[in-house]
Length: 181
Image 1: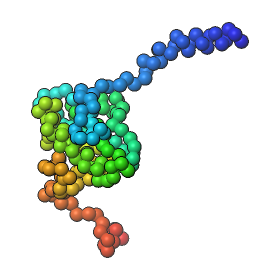
Image 2: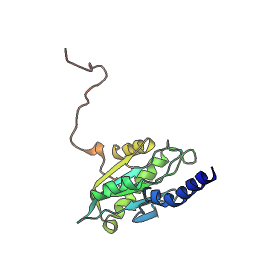
Image 3: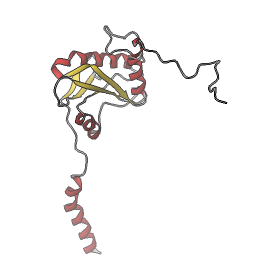
Image 4: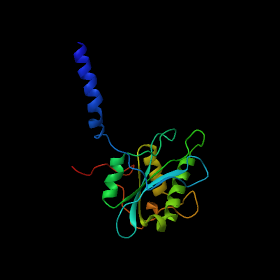
């Protein structure tokens, strides 16, 4: 029994480093913990994509119901976009109830405006900025994209609501959902 224990301990000791190589390694941001506003949580991480000319940018807004969460990103996710020549940014924003809504949305808009001011320095194509996020981050992304006015001066991104093309909704109250027989 003692020899079995010794074998297990030896394998764990010597094999551990072999398996550690399979663990995902962090991908340090090109710019880390850059302040975009006056509050402690107003920080952004930015990963610069390689390529000729200004690069498109994907901004990730974390979820968490506006009461939790942070901008920490999976290196594999970030690398996926960098490999396609798309720069990546992840932001933190103030959380509720200390800063009730719409403060997190205002922070996200401020972060996007800040990223636009860094366009020349960080090689960002300001005409190709997209937002993403899960849960509260998705809602915040939509609030930033689909309003005709911005909570801060100068629209931080081109607003979907300002586009001239219009697509009629497939269904409206009072109209049948399907006209098929």
